[in-house]
Structures are given as C-alpha cells and as structure tokens.
Length: 544
Image (tube, rainbow, N blue to C red):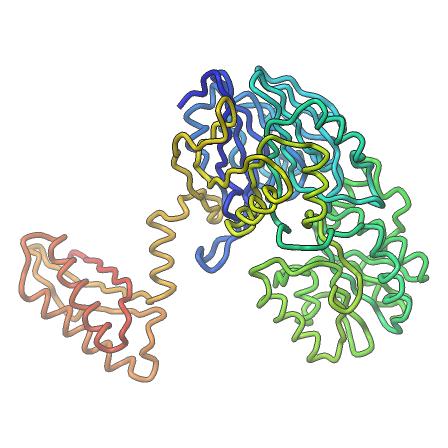
C-alpha cells in the first residue's frame, strides 16, 4: 500500500506487547519510522536471546521511507538497528547520548554504511511531509525525546516512554507550560505509552530515591551491592553521590554499566561520578568501605550479580553484606530473580527491594500523569501503544473518561487512518517476528525454531541404516536418543526401536524417501508406546 492524501499510522512492533517498538507514519506517498527496537526471548524460543521485528512491509517500500527518528536509547527502541537498519538504507536521527549508544552497536557489528545524524535536544528534522520536533520528557534514561510530527493533515504527539518528574536528576524535561503551548497549537493524535496505565499513583521522581538509598547504605555494616538498570544514568549519578557521602569506595561490575558510564560522561553527564576500583582492589578493602554497583537485577545468570550470587565472580559477598535491588521486576523475570535472591539467602545475605524501602521509581506514567498530559495537549484522539492489549485497552477507557474525544486500540499490522475522517482501521498488513540465532536472523516461527521447540518438548531419536546398492538394508540399525524419558529401560527400548525400524525396512518401499518415512513413523510409534511422547525422528541412510 502507498499512503495518499492522508495521515496513516502502522505499528510493526510494540502494540499488544511491551518491547520491540517500531512505528510507521505514512503521508503523501512517504513513510517515517519512529524507533527500531528488540524484545528479549522467553521459553517460546529455545536458544534465542533477541527477538526482532519483521520489517518486510517497509523493506518492500524502502524507497518511500525517509528516515528513522529515535526517541531514546533503551534496547526496546534501538536494539534492532545493528541488525536491520542497513537494509533500509535511510538515515537515523537521534540526540547525542542516544546516538553514541547506537554508534557503539554499529561498530560492534562492523557496520560503517549506516548514516547516523545527531540532533540537538529539542531540535527539528524536516523529512518530506513530516516536520519533526523533539520535545524532552523525563524517563529512566537520559535524553528521552517525544516527537511532535506536523503534517499537512494534522499534528501527532508521539510520546515515546515518559513520565513526569519535578526533580529528574539529569536533564530538563519539558514544563507543563511548554506542553500546554503545543496543545494550544492543536494536536490531532496522541500516540502514547501505556505501560503503567493500571497504576493509580504517579511514577515518582528520580530524585526521591536518594534519601532511602542513603539510609539503607549508611546503616549497612558490611559490603553493599546495589543492582539497577544499567541505562539509568540518573540512578548511577545518585549512587555515585551515595557512595561518596557514605564514605565508601565504588566498584562497578558489568560491561553494560561500563558502557553507559562511558557514554554518559562523553555526553556531559556524570561529571562528579567518583573514581572506581577494580575487582582485586575492591576485595582488599574493609567490607564497610566498599559499595558495588552491578548488573543482573533481572535475574540474568551471566550478569555480574548472578555470578556473584553463584560464587563464580572475582567479587565475593558474605554474611554481613547487603544487596539492594534498586529496580523493579520486569514481568516474566520473577523466577530468574527468585533464583538469585534464594542463592543470596542461602549465604545469609539480606536483600532490600522496592517493597522494603523507596529505592526505585518507574520510568512510565501512572494515571495521574496520563490525565495531566491529556489536559495539556487536548488531543482529538488517543492511539495507545507500548503495552499488552490489557494496558492499551485500559488507557483507551481512561482517556475517554478524562475527556479525550476519540480513541482507537490497534494491533501490530493494523493500518490506522488518523486523518481525514479518523481514527479508523482501513486495512491489515502482515507483521511478525524474527530471531537472532547465533549470527543468523531467522523467522521466529520458521522450520528451525519449530524443530527446536519440538525437540525441546519431545526429544530426538536418530536412526542410521546401511543400504546396499539395491537399496536393501544391511545389518542392524543404529539408534541414538536425546531427551527421551527412557533412562532405566534404555537398552530395552533401543532393541524394540531397532526391531521396528527393521520391520519397516523389510516391507520395502518404492524409493528412499518412502522408506525413510516408513522407518520414521515406525520408530516414532514405538517411542510413543513407550513414553507417551512423539519425538522428532531423523532417519539417515549410508550406502555400502
């Protein structure tokens, strides 16, 4: 499809899900992309860490794509850039801090042909029918920028991830007066973050966590380890101040923390951040003199905290030390976080979370903040994004109750006409997911991942037979099993499976493929009778 004299919105990711944000705006034959993120894999994708959006729709129309405007540097907004942006062949626009994060990713992948343009905070970009202006908002990473998109058919306020914060620690978000002025000029559509729609309280100010962090660290008698989101440079700034005021030497553990600290300093942030010591020097300090900031608060087993808790990291904790989770559990990570917290408990190391002290605030707006933004901007319509269906539907209901005239709850792939005569879903385009499997990008529901799921659930049986030049089986089949629950009766099962393979082979077949299928079915039938499972059965022939 090609947009005509109209303003369209199409999400390729980030709607009906939290993560993998990719949003398209269409107008007068051209497209604009806002953000290009990833999400993280779960048990649905065995062996996979990153899930990417399928950009087939816009790749087929890349000659009409004018650019990619990035709101901020979180992975669910920039993580797909090193894997997918080069094929789109358009410039990427971001502020300095975000651009430095992106540049680091491109360099890691050896990509030199992606054009990256640095736009100042609050700056403007003119791309065909799209006149884009950045508006700084508070979030849990520096330089979050909402995007005001002016078109011949109306203005869109694309919020990105945001909250209200009167004491943000780093940066200066737009004031209510600035946002009201935008509303005075007229806003057709607010495309808005839905993550915390169910929260009846405001997200809270970043500056408010300092007092309790200082109290918790100050009362500790041994080492203190604080884990937080690496991207939250404002929290790192606060933790640096807490370390100095409590008289503790700071040690940082985690590559992503090192990267964020480096990028933040290069962009003019963390100017007063204290000097840090390496792991060996840290362990020589008296426990009461050391404060560690570490990655791994979401239960990542290979992150610093996970390895420290397991006792396989150069930094060690012992009874009398303390671990502070200055972060919130991301839904889906509860079990992994619990594993680490239980490991700490077995070592008699207490933990403090946001439930015991005010050591974390969210980066997403609660209902009072949403209501305030509606009041300032006065949009004609709300299009919820950045949430599961329940979050988006709830924001739509809340917006109507707060006086927003129209809302529309869309899904990835829904083409929404915002103007004229909007909002309305006018068509549906195919969307999907890709996975990064090692160094290869594959369809998330393609043959490779489907086979891996089946093997993970039901196991694998490999059958090898020798055939003479007439296609007659010779000798006893060789069978190997992987992940099939026949541990105590393994030999008996293998004998019976070999008999089943021989019987199927003895009946003959019109060709090798028919013989292979007959043997496969016979062996799988045998395995099902023994175990109730239907394993993947691979049959191979060797010619002799």
